[in-house]
Length: 331
Image (tube, rainbow, N blue to C red; front, side, top):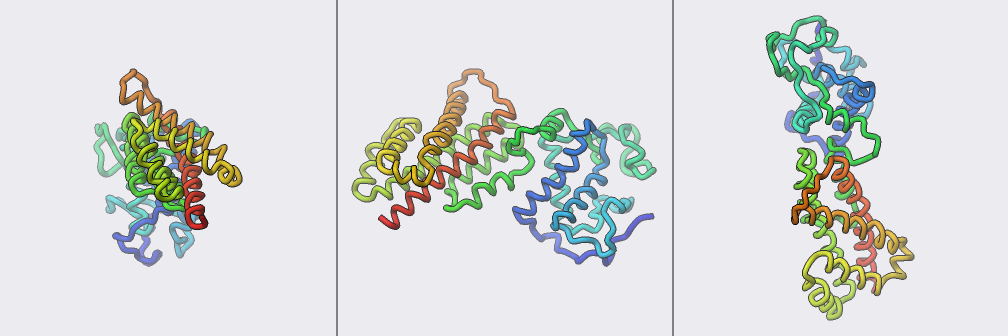
């Protein structure tokens, strides 16, 4: 029996947008449906409509989708063979985004299409697929996990998840003070190419974002030192340095020389000398290896680690910026 959803949901506009927070929750729900299978050693094939319905049930539990009026679960529903893109009664904008996330996983190489011959009868509700002949070699209604996908889904190192750019970028967008727009422009592009598996481009863009973060910190140090002292330091001892490494050393020396006691009270001195300095150098060295070809190869885990470390790097640099701005106001 096919369950119909008419009247069971409040209608939503198909043009309604999904908030950044909800996007992250939706991605987590979709990935969780695959992660539990991957951790059980299952590679598929899996029926995409079943994964869709399972994800929607998780979104009800997460309060992203309201409960059905009849209290039934999405997994209790059967697909309507007349509907080529069934929402199963889920709000249209959420359903579309769930499908988008599934498609992204194909593009990222986490999923691959199955063949019609691989279709398990037990997941097709006892019916032959209506849209694919038995000789079909690519059948998008069924998917399999790639080896790369298994590695991502079973990773236990707590690295930044490739599937969730919104969750990663929220670490910066929700910061106080707000991050520099130019840094965010490069960082957003960086995350996008990382998801596509382009590791060299990821490091180059992350290096540019890192340089911009240091530049903003130097500008705040200049303003805190005041005129004419700060302007003279910025123009003659910072900006005219040949490369970013020399500029960072000039910044660090003046910052610690002028404000070491205050930074220490705010528990920022050790963090700057440790996390900020080490991460800055790590990213700079990796970028230099690309700019001056040395044959170095970068793995997903290594580049993921750069992105993961950049969060703490930014947090401490941003707290240092906030510290300098307080001095500007009170000094």
